[in-house]
Image 1 (cartoon, rainbow, N blue to C red):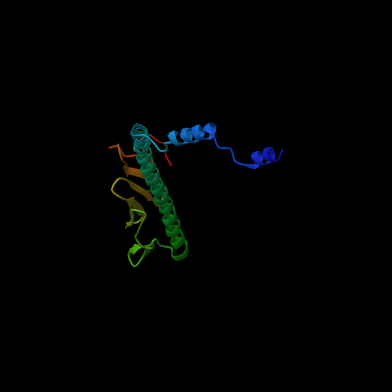
Image 2 (tube, helix red, strand yellow):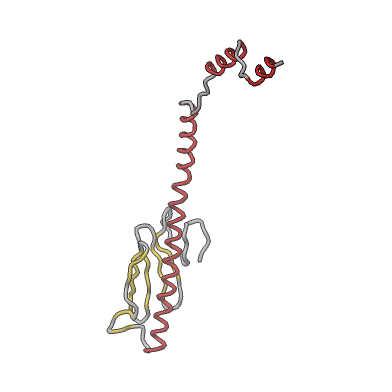
Length: 158
């Protein structure tokens, strides 16, 4: 009886244990990616980037245009405020509001009896006059002029 108790507590040694350890040694788990998997993933990411990057660039340009159009409206409001305060759009023979540049656009004022504000960069040219008449004289993918503000040639007027 004493032998049976000690046999239960003793670790088993034998053929089964050796066979099990040989199986564990021969089973090697390989982790990682194959070259084909990496090439497929790289191709998919390249295609997605080829579509996403130009879309993002156009998105940021449209944002700059929207900011320029907002600035034009603010400049005309400042001109009208100056007219109400001073009874003139001019200060010392120049537009009451100074020219400025921001977000890739140059803003300039032309003053005769009335004023015309122009926002211009390499791709776009927008104008607004004292009467609130808006025009787009330069826009990508178009050679036409429009009597409104357009962000894209086929788009809606603002």
